[in-house]
Image (cartoon, rainbow over all chains, first blue to last red; front, side, top):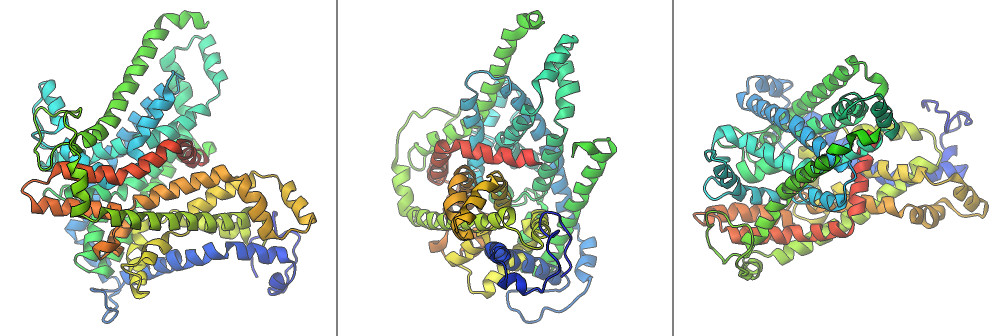
Length: 315
Length: 284
């Protein structure tokens, strides 16, 4: 059996009869048995659906019955090239990502920096910041619908206090997506902040002290010590942030349903509609694979970009 | 050297507190608003300017809620499904994690890397075929349809493997010398020693299962099978069409009911939430 020789376990084992592994020393058998439940689960509920999804994407299958799922080859993908709605949805997802990820990371970084100052009562603040994170998307969406109400919502009330005109947050196609961005940033702030804090704590205190001795002020310390040493955290948060943003679904499903005027029609919502409202499951599977491809490419770009900046050793 | 900066130490601290208070308000105000609105009389409209602190304490919405919508049933469903998923995940992930960390077998590390690779796959790709598989098994609109696909989590295996790796091998060797089998070593030594990590995984799994929307909304066809999250989503959609304007006090009461269990659990187990999240970031 061809396995990659890893020093940890196979160096001492000569190529044995495969069956001896199960009947011989109980240790190896135990290992396989221990991972068996999760392995079966993985095969059945991940690997098989994955293969089936690829298989489906090459077929035109409309409807739950397993009859007439004709093989159409690349037709689904060819159709997708001209499917304006899909690419519009992709653009919407990208717009959402570009708005929500940098802003969300920056705000949560600022909060993390303040929290790192070891002021008293940080625990209370941390508790409060985390409340939106653990809340259910549906409940949060419902609350925010009322907060964003153009007439009686608190947001417009605050705007009126500073003499700004009210905004029709969820009704105006230009403001619907920013509304979702606001809600998403609000909900994820505590989460990002915690991770930033973990990264901040990893910066050795001596560096700051040495810099202070050399006469560096606060801004210099931040720019030349903190930020560079936060790079692994930044990379992690931006990559997972982008991946997550492209998959946004719940607020769209509950609040805007793709509207108004398709301004919040994001890719996952499009796939969901296509599969479970229009029952074009083959095509929807193809759309899902294209989404995966886009996310994959974007992630690779992020890796390469960071590598180009000579930060490879940070990994 | 530090003395040079003392003059702006205090104002900086004040500025810091201001920022924190401002952000904290932003975080908390929506929740307070939710509670306040839920206490308004049934069917009342909003006042302008919007009032934040509750002036009325009418709890009729809550009593009405349970007669309009079977939230009690939703609650039972959610509890059962979540509990099963949490226990299942703890069990399956712990078993696999022990295998990957403390047992030797050919291909162990290769298989583990493959496990990790699957974490990159977004759920939407397998959403449709998974649904079709569940449909073919006859599991649509059943408990098992909602539970079984979530029974094992590669992230959980990863988390627990880290925990198990932190336990010295000596325990294992000593137990083996005394003649204990692997399962016994696992159950009586390793599990009790990693309770914090188990608690972290349990809490994260609880949160994920309790607030899951995408999967349960597909599986639950009958009203009787809905979880609280799904019930709330449907309730929101139905009131939007039934009334000219949704009955917001009622909606808010429903939201409070849905969110309360998770919030209560959170307040008691904060540490595990924070630790679990930090661990994902540090590993990078």
